Length: 485
Image (cartoon, rainbow, N blue to C red; front, side):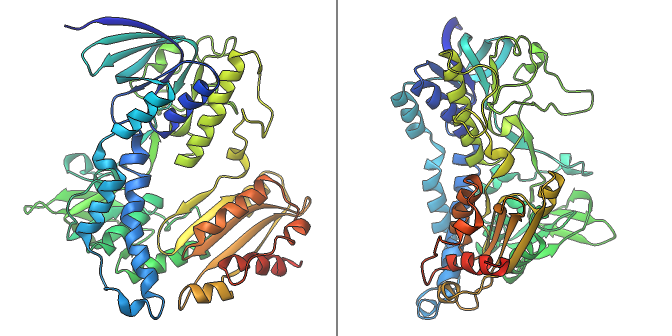
């Protein structure tokens, strides 16, 4: 028998992924009560269908290739991966799609969990259709936080709606490796998964309307493209796709613009994501999309949603992570969550009114200056901060210095090591604005660049940060020398 249960908390968080968990954790640390509302697995997309399983699929191939690139180790390893063992390792990192450990963490942290579909019914009001058959009418004394993540964006491709295709969810949860895989999209997800499946034995073709990893410097993306081709991946770049059709044997054929086709057993579509805001009742508090458009939220630096019934006079509605639509990266979403949770707790105590000061614990200032991003292909691609073009658009006088990664550490790391590095410099303040590294295992160089940018370390002081020898980090010295120090 269905019951209508009324509950009251300081903070209601819709969505119990990594972002929602972090918001709830911070408000509880701040002395407030919190409830997480989640219809799927606690831990969200990253834990079960994105970051963790995709990297678990990628890492064995990178480790094997790394060994094959070092004489002495190369003779001791096999030439191919054990795909069954890789999938078993992936299952371990997804906890076999069971969220018991995450639920225990929620309970141990003092956060309440309601499993069900939640939607906003008015200011500080949320209704939940519980998976237990009950209905919950929730009231937030302080805040409601939207942390519902994002969902794949399907391209307007003729025939796509009529065929069975993969998104990243199906690809990362796969139980068998297809003989032939077509990947539509040349962004981070498509590039990573194309290489993962190629190294697991699939024949892979990647089709992209634009360049491969077009948001990154061409020199860096070119190294990744070479790595994909070395794994046998066919790259069809700057190539449109006109339609997709299913064949009599169950395979799928992509018909390409200008002629040509690609036939595969499975099709993976990775053409972007958008905030998952449908069906959560935002229109009931005055937030609705324009006709023919998807709803996008605007937030201040604390995550407070701009607009919404009563939100300007008495703040109550926040958004964080992919749902906020600013930066769709798990680590950046968790950063936003920490700032938002702290801001909510501070406002509840009267310690924060109005906006938050830049670089304070309540502000998401790094979103504007220092977003780190890693593409976990082999070779890796890692960048943080602004490009020269972005800096110039912001009115800054910027320059760049770049060179191949050719230091003692890289030559020891692997035979025929190929890498590339770039620094973007604010010429007026003589501080770093951005950095990009491409090459095997360069992700570990990135946090030093992030610290330098966030800390606005003057180049003259950065010169005294001596890299250990012989490591790949010696490229920092070479870049500064190239700049003129």
